[in-house]
Image (cartoon, rainbow over all chains, first blue to last red; front, top):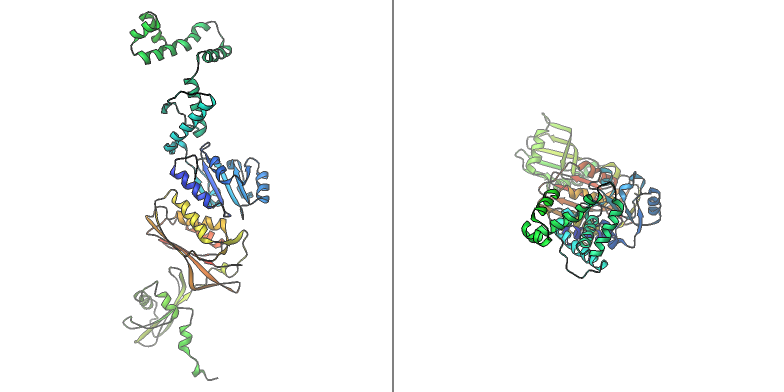
Length: 240
Length: 235
C-alpha cells in the first residue's frame, strides 16, 4: 500500500475506506482544509464519479445517475436531507473541524482526518517531499537545510509547501536575482521624499544581521565591513 | 366428546408462556418447555420470590399486570395460583413482539448483504480511535440477508461507539438455533448479533432502538450489552 503519510490513523482510515469500497454505504471524511483528504480519496476512488458540493442540483443529478460517487466540498451543501444515499457508495469530503447531528445521522461511517499539527510524523515526510520538489523545479543541486521554525503549517499542506518553496528560493537566490527582486520592489514602493534613507534599511539591516550571526562581535564585523566601529554601533541602535 | 382423553399436561408443556410449579420450600416440581428457556436468564429462587410476592391471599388465582424483562425475554403479566399448601404455580405472560414485525414493508435500498462484511468494516472503523480489545465470535457462513447496508452500518457504528470506553468487547454473530420470527405470515430464521462488555454508554440508546426499528430488527439494549435479532430474508 502506498499513501503519502506516515500516520497510523491515516493508514487505518485508508484501510477502512478500502474495505468499504464494495459496499453500498456512505462515508464522511472531515477535517481541516488541505490535510490530504482529497488526495487519499483520489488514490482509492479515482474511478468514482466526482462532483463538487457547491451546486446541490449537480450533486442530486450525480446521485440519481451513478452508484459510486465522491462529493467534494460537502460543507457547501445546505440541505443534506435532499440527498438520497440509498444503494450507492458515497464518499463525502467535508472541510470542517466538527460535524453536526444531521451529518452524523446521514452517514454510515465518519472519519476524522487529522491536521498536520496532530501528525508530527507527516511534517518531516512532507518537508522532504516538498523540498525535493522545489529543488527540482528551481534546478538546485546543493543541500538546503530547513529549520522547523521556517515551516508554516497553519494551513496544513498548503502553507507547508508554500513556506518550503519560499525558504528554498530565498536561501538560494543569486546576486542578480536579488537585485531584480529589489528592483521590482522599489518600482512599487518609490514614494515620499526620504526614499534613500527608508529603503536603505532593507539592505543595511539584513547585511548587519547576517554579519553579526557569522562573526559574533561588532569589532570584528566593523573590520570586515570596512566601516568605523562607532558607525556600526549607531546603525545597530537604529535598526534593532 | 369425552374430555377425559385430553392430555392437559401436554398442553401445558407446549404453552408459549413459561409455567413453573414449586413446592412450599421453593423446590421445582414441574416446569414447561418455555420455562426451561426462562431459567437460563433467571434463577428458580428469583421466580419463587415472584410467586410469593404476587400470590393471592387465599387459595385461588391472581393475575398482576407488570413489566418484567430478562434479557430479550419480556413479559407483561404474572399469574400465581395455588389451592393447596403443597404447591404454588407461577406463569409469566410474554409481551408480544414489537408490532412492526407483524408487518414489514420492503424498505428502500435493501440488497442481499453479507453481514460479516459490514461488521468487519464497522470494527476496523471503530478501532481507528479506540483501544478496546475486541474478541470476535462470528459465524462466517451466515447466509446473505436483505438489508439496507447504509442504515445497518449506521446502526453498527452507533452501537459500537457506545462501547468506546470499554476495555474489552465481545462480538458474537450467529444463526439463532431453533429461533424464528413470523413476519407477514412467513417464518424466517434469525441472525443474532450481540455486543457484550463490562460497561457502555447508554445515552444514545433511543437512537439505536429507533434505527433498529426502522430496519425491522428486534433490539435488546441492556446495561452491558446490545443484541439484535435480524430476520434472515434471502428474497
